[in-house]
Structure formats: C-alpha cells, structure tokens
Image 1 (cartoon, protein in one colour):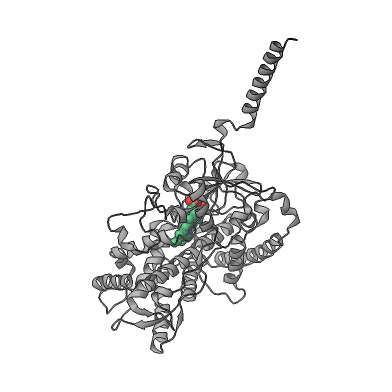
Image 2: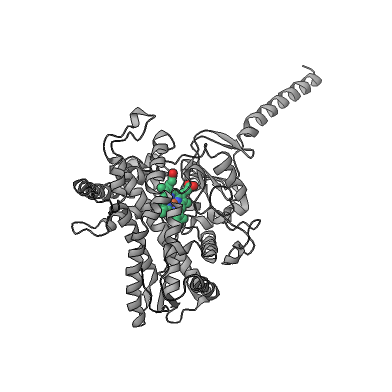
Length: 507
Ligand code: HEM
C-alpha cells in the first residue's frame, strides 16, 4: 500500500474512531444531568448531607453548582432545588410529575405501609385520603370548631405564667410552647392528652425522633436487610406499642359514641364515621377493609401538626426577644385593638396586620421544614435543559430560596416591615418563600398551623412583657439550630414573664 493510501486509511480510521468516541463518551445533550459535585463510590454524595445542618450545606453547594443541582445519595439519584424560579418549575409547571413521595423505611413501618397522607405515593389512594383530610379534618370550619380547645389550653397556660410572674420565675419558653401545642393537638386528634394506662405522647415522640433520623437503608436499600443501625428493630418495636395504644383509643371511642350535639367530635370520631365509606373508589386493591388507614392518618396528623407549630412559635418568640422594637410594636398593635383589660380572642387575631408580617418574616428566616418533605419523580422529564430520570428524589431547599438575593435584600436580617407592600398567601402563586411547600403535596394543615401560632403569640405578648434572664441580651441570645424532623432551637429559650394586663377576663 502506498504511503498516500496509508495516510488516507489512517485519516478515515482516526476520524471514524473520533466520531464514535464523541458519540459514546459524552452524554447525549437531551440526557444532560444537572451539575453537581462528583460522587464517591457506593456512598455517592451522602457525605454532603451527613452533617449537622444539611440545609445550610446544600445552600452553600448550590451557590457553586446552581439552583438545579444533582447529587447521588447512595443509590438514589437526587436533585436539589434552590431558587424560586426552579421551585416554580418543579412544584407548579410540572407539579404532577413530582407529586409522589419516596418510600421511607420508618414511615413504611409506622404508617402501615405509608397508608397515611404525608408519605403515601401519588395515586388514587393518596387522592382519596387527601380529600378526606382536607374536607373532614382540616377545613376552615373544622379549624374554627377546635377554637375552644385552643382557648382552654392557652387559658391554663396564662394562669400558670401569671403565677410564675408573681415570683419572678425564669420560664423555659421552649418547653411550655411544646407542651401547649402538644396538648392542643392531642385533644383535637384523640380527644384528650393524658391516659393513665399508657404514655402516648412519649411513644409518639420516640416515633418522631426515628422518622427524623438518618437511615442508611433509605439510600442504599440492599443494606436494609443487615439493619446496621438497628433502626428497623427499634421502629418495629415502637410501632407495635403505638398500634396497641391507638387500638385502645379507637375502641374507647367506639364504645362511647358522641350522642350530645353540644359535645365536640375529635379526629377519631370523625374518621370512625368514615369507616364504612369506600375510601379508594378507583382501585379495588386499595379498598380499606380494616382501620389501619385511620391509625395511619391519626399518626400523620399528630406528627405533622405538633413539631411544626411548636417550633415556629419558638422561633417567633426568639426573634421578638432579639428585637425589642418589633415586640413593642406588636404589643401596641394588639393593645390598640383589644385594650388591656381583656385577653385576645381568636376573632381579634384577623385584625392584627403587623402580626401577619412578623409571622411571614419568621417563616422566611426559619422555615421549620427547610428541605420540605422529599418528592419523587413519577416519570423521566427534561426541565430547563436537564434530564431528570424517573424515580429521582427531589429536595426543595426552602431555606436557600428564602435567602435568594434576587428576591430578598439583607436576607439574614429579621425585618417584618419588608412585608408592608408584599403579601404572601402561600397558595401556590409565589415561590420566593415557601415554608409550607406548594402544589398538590403542599401542606394540608396550613390554616390550622397559622391559626394556632398567631393565637399563641398574640396572647403571650399581650398578657406579658418578657425579659431575658441572667446576662443574656437581645444581641447575644443563642439562635443555633438543630436539624431533625423539623429544625428547632439547639438550646431551649428562657425568659421571665411580667404580667401586663389589668383585670383580664378570659370570656
Ligand atoms: C407552621 C406550621 C406548619 C408548617 C411550616 C408546615 C410545613 C409543611 C411542609 C413544608 C410540608 C411539605 C410540603 C411539600 O412537600 O410541598 C407539609 C406537608 C404536610 N403538612 Fe404541614 N406544616 C405545618 C402545620 C401543619 C399542620 C397543623 C398540619 C395538620 C394538622 C399539617 C399537615 C400536613 C400534611 C398532612 C402534609 C402532607 C401533605 C401531602 O403529602 O399530601 N401541617 N407541611
């Protein structure tokens, strides 16, 4: 073969190899994944979220890799959303694609195979349960129906704080707020909060800690059979005890049905009245023949309502103590409407416009579920040029979104006045602050939560002036966070109440 022929042969071979290499070595443009840090073998990027405050770490990473970022968490392909624009694409434009939840081992065990609302996969069963909860448990009329429970529990708390004020006692505000919200939630859901035979609160607290714990099996499923962290055993044990307690509570309700029109129903009564209804009309296989769905929904309601509302109240209180100007302005607003010789009633709260701004600002600065509740894609889809494969886990970083400098100036500063001309109604239209998530899987109990928090805060700042104890000043008050099922204060909040009303009557 002549040298020219050799050159031509080599040229053709090289070109052909090059074209083949280009074709197979680069991902096809339509399969381009969102950018993200390189994964390690087996664990992928798990080390990036295994830290004390993952929402902060993911916020920092998103500043390098962008608002739609890829992570490989063990075996689970994951996308992290960190801007309002990206959140709108995932939670509004393509909401239906991301309306499912991944299977979480603890929820599978506690909720009888995720038969509650929060963790069930998108489909006919979830749609029926969501409709049932929205209409029968969490509607505006039901929120109002439970006003007497909130009033009674707050009345008891104010009396005990008045006694503490008399002797200048330092009060553990975190603890009293947790107990208050727990009492309200347990009375609303189960009818009462104390049982002599068992400690239901303690059991559910243990369950909640397990739900918030990092479980390796959720990311590397084949490791699940070895139960390396012992979580499967513990969850199964607690779940069995919880099931026995819930069975007893339901049986007690069955044996004492509500006959008196003036007696308020609780969630158990309401759900029992649905037991003969076919909850899942579209799917024969999902037909509910026992009461597991009632137990799963009861648990979901307690878990979803308690920590979120208690933690939000604590952050609001902390910010008010850190900002005496805001505290004074709020007290003045309430005093101008209510005077100082009676306590706040629930109907007053709607008039407190500055309170609305304080709560909006607290929810922006301290979203208590900063990564919302994870979603899972139901099909493969290309968004903004990035390919998102089926069954990708989606985590929306509400913490990062609420700090996006394109939407918020001095984002770390707590400044309620930024909401004077800017109303957020959390109904899925705005995405600059999404503490309740958005779309089909958005929070089902938002009105219940907001009503509870607003009443608690207005009552406690109207009845009392609050002083920081010892050498704590507004500027050195510890505001460190602790990550779990919700992001709470790392240290409990302490303060001294000083009663400030005249002869208040709690009508
Ligand atoms: C300040 C109080 C609250 C906050 C900040 C909050 C926040 C959230 C968030 C971020 C989600 C996930 C949304 C998503 O995936 O897009 C959620 C879901 C949910 N929340 Fe809330 N929540 C609060 C109070 C409540 C209350 C009081 C209840 C019930 C009584 C409740 C019931 C639920 C339920 C059932 C879901 C799951 C909905 C579903 O998957 O279909 N929440 N909440």
